[in-house]
Image (cartoon, rainbow, N blue to C red; front, side):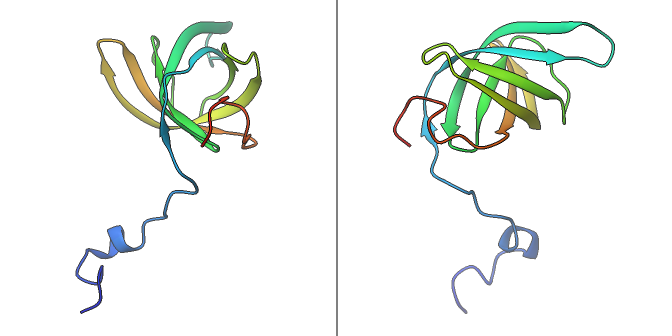
Amino acid sequence: MPFGEDLPRDIRDKRKRRGPRVNSRVPVTIEWNGALGPLSFEAGFTRVVNSYGCLLVSPKEINLQQKLRLTNLATRKLAGGVVVWKGTQRPDGWELGVELIPADLDFWGVEI
């Protein structure tokens, strides 16, 4: 049996990542406009980055599919994004998967 054929179908068919990931703590400002309130600003940071997005840690809970804007405080670059995954709250904040729209190869300021 070829490698991988013994895995469940949902795992075999799962989409592969689009690019390499790098563990990198990048300080960011998170800006979003919630459905019930005014524009919100929070300081956050990343745990993992790639050209297409990041694993973001936010002090506030942000809903799935929420559009937001990130400012990389190291490079002062801005990027739009959307929350595509919401993890659990940890002592340092909520873990969120954010997809950059559009993807920006230079946004993080690290070699990926």
